[in-house]
Image (tube, rainbow, N blue to C red):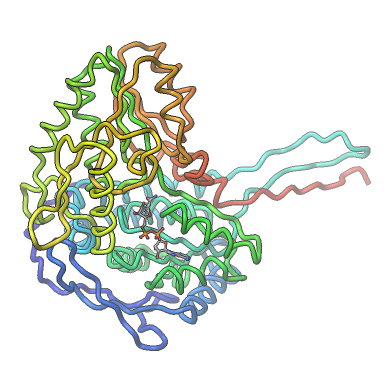
Length: 493
Ligand code: NAD
């Protein structure tokens, strides 16, 4: 299927702004709404129904009914696979509108939303649809006295709560929803309050794909009300969350009431290491994209740069040159390479770190806001900060990288691992032994070598240490959305 280049009407009305519960778009119980804002100009895009704990309760009831009595977990696996494949196709066919919504709400370049985020989400549904027919158990030869036929079944968990952030609203939703649905679970999705629109449109496409009512429910609203209720709900069997480590801890607390399963994909402060024998041009380009892509709002962003002394000046000068050339602007401007950060609140947070960075280190380039309107921030490189500086330790989640020097592999591995996070890392070298030795020693869920930020539905992604629990994507994710049942049958009498 190909994506045709559309003409964008930025002002066209948004079709879906209510809650999706049991296959119907409905107002919230108390009728309240909230504004969703375009971060490129600070203007209201539209009003969206604002859910409450009571709305979560009715969405969970619908998902519970759909799981306990509905066709979705009971249908032939091939039928479930076909519906998910259709959903992937519908997403591709909808790239123009889905991309428009994502750019309006999140700020990212329209070209990236349509040619990156939407096909990536579609690819997740296509890839994960195949697992519906491949959730196999095993036959186990046991040694207990007697004769037995013993086997395992891999079964869906039940109702899964999905709580997602605002940096890749559609993509991160698909990371969770695609495997959850492939296994036969039903879901209640809480989009981030800054970016609710693409989730609602995805909900509509789920219905069009033939996914039965009640299987996918969407409740917009705030974290402490809607998110909290979903995480603590006694009839929810699992919660899968992506966002900050602080909120991850709150989710864990909330989930303990019924000991629901928890997947946490949390923050990062990823080390990107450039050895002196690297292809320097490729390392500069890859490291720049690794931090500035999506305005640095990526959990795996290459936010700590470690460059060998011999090539430090060349690499930092090259990255500064690239940073100054990046076109930052409105996502609908075809020239734009990176958009604004996603909300006023986040803009203030990143701006605060720019002030902290100016005290803790030197500004190589950037360090300021761009323009008076919208939440645009200059691609920024700091250098010379101490290892325990806040800009080295804390996740900024903006277009801000901190450059550091190293002399040898021992020193850089120690520095790279000197963080509470463990999400991702980059290694740039032409030496195969250095590549593998370093990759083995880095405490990170993903290590990219001579590349950065490569994602694929087949590659497991997730964190070590305080970057989280569990994995998204790949075969491994199916363990996080299913349980194993052992059936032991006595057959000798
Ligand atoms: P957050 O973690 O608070 O929000 C993410 C999601 O969790 C949103 O849907 C939010 O409504 C929900 N949420 C918030 N409080 C909740 C609660 N008590 N119970 C249940 N759900 C709750 O993120 P934020 O405040 O929007 O951003 C703060 C920082 O988090 C960012 O600056 C960044 O460092 C980090 N972050 C990381 C990722 C990531 O991909 N790992 C994504 C977004 C933000």
